[in-house]
Image (cartoon, rainbow, N blue to C red; front, side, top):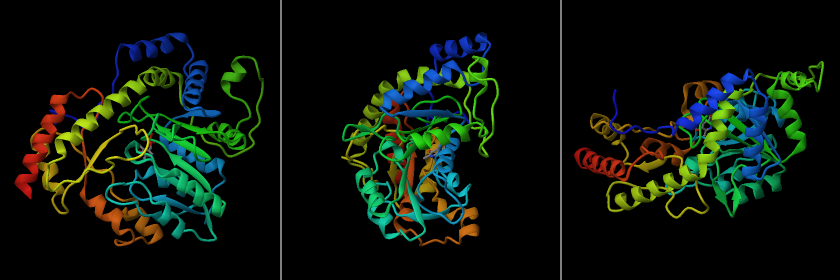
Length: 380
Ligand SMILES: Cc1ncc(COP(=O)(O)O)c(C=O)c1O
């Protein structure tokens, strides 16, 4: 299908091409100098002590789980309105997911009050997702965590450079993960980053990212080490120099691209303000969001027809997300059923994601809005 307006579109240009070519010509492709620079720039951008680039956002999340020592039977409180990787990453290590509700139709982020209600003697930690790049009420979540002695992981896949009270998302919890998948605010193709201020977690992340080995190929290449031991059952979750080179260029563009996403979101909101049958979440939300995606809520039972109408008009839309607890694997393994999370389930049935990326024009936004209005009048 050739779309007139796609859902997302990475901003890739001559600078990325040159950066990739420079790496190809350098003779060193696996993690090395370029990755070190990418990690150090990412860490200083956020003001965090440690950053480790990874092969994906999922790998970054799993390194968070491994570093925190998640094990069989540990209960971890998670949102259900997220990409499945948020939850899978902890289930890999035997965690039992305990799903908490979203706050409501205006705020699709996890509810700190509902988190606290779901705590048991087996609860070990809380995972939050800054949905669409809008800050979770993280101070309240940290308060709950402190009261019950729990760790907090931020899935900041949607939220690079977003802030709350002047502080970057991803720096509040014990550890945070970012994704650089092509639809994200910055991309390396596949790729991710795990960040922490805790030295003990950083030591474990370093080991688990690369087979549990005590030294890296790069360190041996530089002559800093000759041998290695294996002291943990690690993975290969490393990034490579090609992708780090893309990441360095994308990092330079991130603030400007987020600003463009913000302006386009404001325009959407203005044009959608008078549309009956439509709710626009996160208006007036606290903090400085990353504006990753543009979610709206259409009337229950109408979404499929709206999506089909938009598709016939050449406009790609999406759904963020089918709730994780109702996926077959999660139903069969943990016994979740409809009705477990009424607000999440209702919103998940009416959420529609409109196209949003920095290269969109104001005319593109107007076309999407007009088509959506037509779709709603036709189907409602
Ligand atoms: C909220 C969220 N968490 C985790 C991920 C996983 O990241 P990746 O696709 O880089 O593995 C994604 C994106 O794909 C995501 O949107």
